[in-house]
Length: 61
Image (cartoon, rainbow, N blue to C red; front, side, top):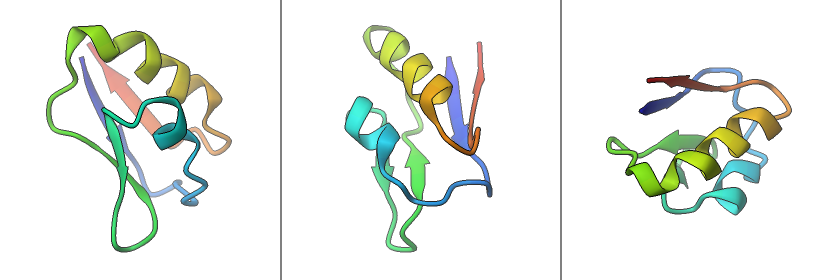
């Protein structure tokens, strides 16, 4: 699985609250996904994507 945070991100921090191991906040105040999503994080990454208020998290398997 890979995750990408697109330009819709408003920097609310919800994804970092749900899965801080996979998402981080950048200096620009928006979220970014780590390059490597470990299998044990996949459930939380999926939850973060489904919870994102702007649908900014794109997941590919």
